[in-house]
Image (cartoon, rainbow, N blue to C red):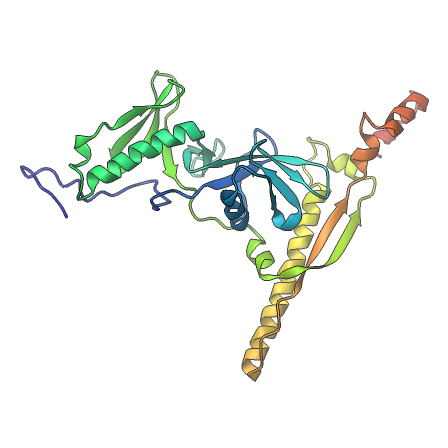
Length: 299
């Protein structure tokens, strides 16, 4: 219902901006990144669900290719060396891409701050409902834990939204978003439709991995190349299976079962041999003349 007093109040009908998750309790989204300077990326939907079931215990994700440890905030690969940073959030800060102002990306909020934001949001939702007294009846500001920012409920273009605002003068404000919103990860749907693994491909790299592994070389690593190969294989499998299903439908016969997955495991020996801590590398350095050409750096 809409309540109007003195011809001016009708805030029981509230339009919101930045509320992607409208559930009573927002779904926690898990995210990862390789470097601290990278943008956070969401995990597969099935992996987020698995982590939300046991948020304090390690969980095998990526169909066995990695293990997520929420306690340590890490994802560790099971078949190769390497790890990613792991975090989770229900509220996010929206910020612009420095190179493309039309593009925005989401920064997960700290859990302590997210709880404060959620409290203010729930207060506003209740106040705007038929059980409340209107948004004007509540405090529209709450301080965040660090004492440097506060969260505000603001109205802009006839819509209410949550905003993180600095208490001082020289910090940046952020529009806030509840929930990550809809997203699609390449290859996730295809892999979910396939059956269990029945073939494994082991790929061994040549000497070029030394160059590909350098941070200043903008080439895909072997791990990323094998991920692309696996997705291409699965895409072809699904395409062939759907064609077979359509043929069966036309003939009036039962659909064939989905094909089994093909896993691709890279064998990355470069780090094991060239690691400064390896006995082999120490022996090579002890016996290698300084006049050896720089070509050894490539191998």
